[in-house]
Amino acid sequence: MSALRPARDGGEPDGSERRLLDQLRSGDERAFDRLVSLHSPGLLRVARTFVSTQAVAEEVVQETWLGVLRGIDRFEGRSSLRTWIYRILTNRARTRGVVEHRTVPFATLAARELGEGFTAVDPERFLPADHDRWPHHWAAPPRRWDTSPEAALSHAETLRLVQTEIAALPPAQRAVLTMRDLEGLDSDEVCAILELTAGNQRVLLHRGRSKIRSALEAHLAP
Amino acid sequence: MTTLPEMPCAEFVERVTDHLEGALSIEDEQRLQDHLAACAKCAHYLQQLRDTLELTGELREDDVTPEMRGELRDVFARWRAERS
Image (cartoon, rainbow over all chains, first blue to last red; front, side, top):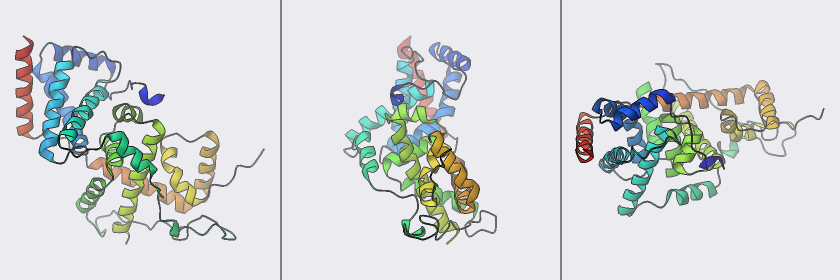
């Protein structure tokens, strides 16, 4: 199953990753700083999808880095370094979530979301199945939205809207969309980190993206 | 040659992520491409999704706060101490 196959694609070439590992193992603080700069912003955003406050998310990220350092000698490169770091993060975040008594296991959240009905677009916006010429084609097509400086929302407001909509997504969709579309992780990595099948990962991504598009349409082209 | 069944707009909007992910079967990819070539509304929908992805990507901020960086340097120093 592809979800169990570790990804070999950390966004850095193997050679530089190996060099970075050697530097870290020899206690090179600059190498650690580089790795921290590269991954901490993404780790924080993903941690935030698992725990209730920014402060707890920051603690989880710190614990993650300690876990990375303590485990660095055991890291064998079967997955990319990035996948391995994110897996440590999700494990810590899960533990914290349990301590906070708020998280249901991720698999349960994902299953719950996957079990819900969903349409990317309100079915009312398509012609009925018995339409004589164009069944299931657009009745109310996507409205043109304007992202120019004269638009209804400024660019900053648009970005804030996207941020708010992502925060409002159900947790599994939020985690997948954050990893894929904000952090730029690829689907194999996300499947390995969140222990999702490729198909379920795509469904969650599809639902998340479709909802953000709908919200943008509603606000940019009311 | 058998003709592939047409992909209506309502199906297009549900398959578009699989298309972007390269996960459609060869037949469904062909149906989607045929539909896209004929339907400006769905082409527009696809463009809106691409705009959405671009906007989402812009939320990426790559700053680590100085406080956090300081704390992580401490984490590193402790680790190096416990290692030696």
